[in-house]
Length: 249
Image (tube, helix red, strand yellow):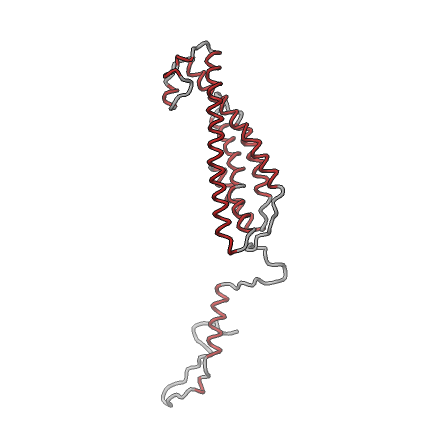
């Protein structure tokens, strides 16, 4: 999550400054593929620091892809289709997430049915030594309560299945990388550098807008000398306000 948030915020600020966004999901999917490959090397004796670094790399790759693709979708359609494009991108992301969880969850379960019994057989432990006679356990507490060498065989078999699952996800990241190479980039309009050099922006600043409005009001006011005023009342000059110089254009 640290890598995901940092990459999302950093890519967003870079896109705001440059108006370019295609490079981020392309590089992000390559980084995600590298991270998934590193995650497939997780073993029983992998330290938490190393596992955290592997997850950091994977998170950075995902962070460069997720929000940028939504921005690319929104930038590719007209304003009237903005809601449809955003909801469509969110829908297909949710659909892909649900499908991915189902596919890779089924792969992990299928591999566990092979890796844990094979590890138990290597340790010389019959499969019926596990509670319920099944190689799939419910909670980490149950696994931690297993006696040796059953405990080592189970966690080693789980690590073997997890390695296969992460390794199977690498081709999907590489496939996404190849697809994004053909992404048509439309430069973002609302960026700091969207105005060509030598030209001023069409949108005035808030202070300038207020100044222009006050100046217009002052110009439309009638001349003080044309107003019928009593002789005993001083004539106020509306063209020269004493509080500020906003109307001096």
